Image (cartoon, rainbow, N blue to C red; front, side, top):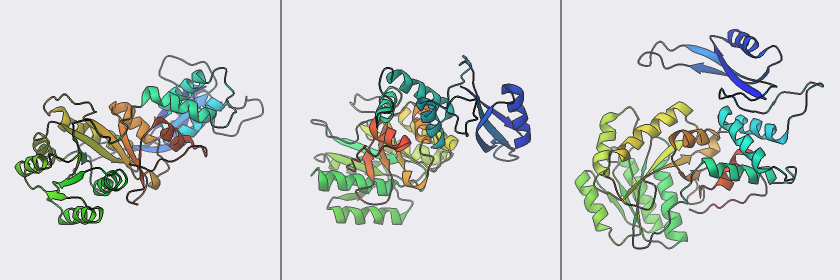
Length: 358
């Protein structure tokens, strides 16, 4: 099955392009409004994008196989389990091109196996994801080394709450020595919130208003296994704020940066945000460290049904995923990312178990 997308100023124009490009038998998979960026954010033009599919050989134009999610007419073959899988992936927000590639990978991995067996496709999808999505395994101890993690991202993505979840899991469940540092001097409420969490958990919390104070706080926590750093919310367009964060981060050459993104965020905005925060790490001094210097952490999975966009962000940025957050409960609503969890998140499988441990 061949898939292509067509854009028009309105639905009628886009549909006319579908018929011209794929014929009258093309099946409409998805219709959505689109809006370009315009000049300096102004004079934006709106339109419609239609994703359509038609039976035919796969071509080398970037088109991919995808499920036919519309009712089948009597003369058409029923969709295969792999086409159904691709359709389910598109439905939860996975990019159609990526969904088709994953479906093809699953088809290849399942060759000669009973795909109707419960959990078989989900397990094959997890294997396919291993080839395309990297994961970090979360925060774990390194012999003789501290783990120092900074959590950055746009406003409202849940940085402070996420840090509290991780701190509680490390300290209360795993009996690790943890300290918190906040450099969010812009919001008094953020400092107080983090200090309240620290008191409840029983771990130290330090506030640093300058890069020098930040370096001193990190040095003072020399015997701590895990240092988690809260930062102010920052727009990807705020160059001054990004440069200020970079000045702080230069004080700690072993720093790991987790870029937090809400799954409710628009895909293009999320990709742009990753680029902005990644540039801070890219200008930091090179370091010999056994972990990824920049990682992705996705929040608010419980607030959207389009969870598949996180796969597109990860594949476009080529960055690994550390954690997934799906609620406000501390320390429960966070889990280490694994291919099995991603597969379960995207297509569902009642046989999969939830780790729920930071």
